Amino acid sequence: MKIVIAVLTVLCAASAQAATPAELLAGYRTEAAQQAAGFQPSAQRGAEFHARRFGVSAKLSSCASCHTDAPAQAGRHVVTDKSIKPLAPAANAERFTDPAKVEKWFKRNCTEVVGRECNPAEKADYIAFLTGGR
Amino acid sequence: MNKSLLLIALLPLAAYADDLRLPLNAPPAFQAECGSCHVAFPPQLLVADDWRRVMRSLDKHYGDNASLDEKTRQTLEDFHVRNAGGRKVGAGRTAPAGELPRLTQTDWFLREHREVPRADWTHAKVKTPANCAACHTRAADGSYREREIVMPNGKHRKD
Image (tube, rainbow over all chains, first blue to last red; front, side, top):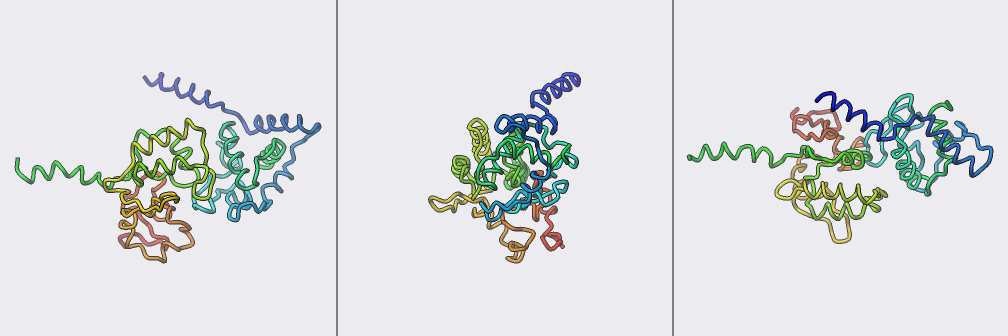
């Protein structure tokens, strides 16, 4: 029985489309390069994006509003006060390992904070920033 | 059968009347979707009709767009409706027409929290009455026992 459970666990984990932050970054980079030839992800641009105050939402004005200036730290939702695990994969190994989850939160948070969906170049820059460009 | 035996038989029911524990049959999406931005609120806190209203207007979710794909949304609506409160916990609808129901505004919630001073509600750490975890230290695990309460000033409920 234990073996069956172990096998099922492995299968379920595999079906959740595990990925690494580097693979996700490479995917967005390829997409971005198709839109603008020669695109290179920039951790610096990602850092600026993280700190930029978009002014679309009064309370959720920037990524840093909830995720703090230091993404290796835990954050806090400014409206509900719920604690948020660190964004940086170095501090939270779960981050950027589930493509569907990553897309879901980019879509939701970009719409709310930036006022539109983020493009592949912005996503690539952002992951480059959070992974320290590695 | 004498009366005391009958009372003993009914005791477990009484103990469960205020039970806010999260149902064991919760779909994985419950924590993943309902527990990301706020504590995954026990479905017992609103009546079924109110949950239907909440779950059918996720694009306008208390100032946020919390839209889900239709399959996940329906799964979660069914879960909330199936486990909704009403007989005791979560009873007493107060939301005016056109406004979303709030689980912090049911008669039951207000009665349970009637002893909480205003200063605690407006404490900087609390931010919103829906921030259960501000005082209910194990709210994230779905546990709201009296002895787990720590007020924002650090005092225990029974101090």
